[in-house]
Amino acid sequence: MFYSKNLKKIKQIKHCFFSRKGGFSKGIYKGLNCGKGSKDNKANVKRNLKFVSKKINVKLDNLKLMYQTHSNRVIVLNKNNKKLKNFYSDAIITSIKGYALGVVTADCVPIILYDNKNQSIGCIHAGWKGAFSGIIEKTIKKFKKLNSKNKILASIGPCIGQKSYEVDIDFYKKFVLRSKRNKIYFFKKNNKKQLFNLRKYVNDKLIRLNVKVDHVNHDTFKEKRNFFSYRRSQKLQEKDYGRCISVISLVS
Image: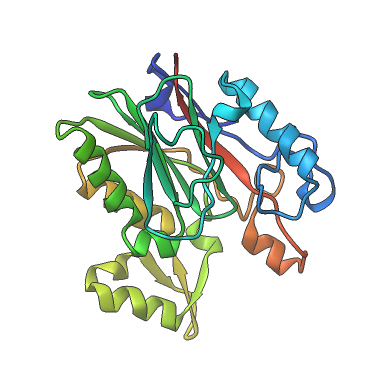
């Protein structure tokens, strides 16, 4: 379990970037697999989520996860929709106490957010597609729509590190065509491959949006004992992969 230095100081919230350690899953999912979308035994995933909700001190039904699709869709959890089981989005925000918001990842960037002025929380699933298509900007905009005066703190959790994130030239060109500035997020490995710094790409977007950021800086690809990794599973030719969970809640 990993924690943000900045968010740890705030009594109004509980948060955690959970590792894969502990939990009830077996085989390639060994540990705390919280991916409902994985092919893991559903009963084990439920037991894992129960463990997480207990640690965060909310009821299992009040731990709200998203059906993540690498989109730029943001949802606000409110009194009208809080009973819903499925939220089709890649970011979620709430100011309801006693609820926890969770994001599951296996190399993508989990971001948890707290608006210190307005007592609201959020989390973002930021893979390259979501980040590229504006999920971060849209989430902060949504916070501002709820209340224009904000003081937002963000913590960027464990994700794939630059040295582990090989991409092809087409990927590189897509980013550089959008903006020449994006060159700073790439390091040339050879004539066919670049290494992409997803963490810094996401960090800089938040900084530009006037969000105070800290990092729980771990490479999910390299740290097999601590984290699940989609890329590592592909390299090992495994049929599927587990997902780690990152959670934030407003203490009731």
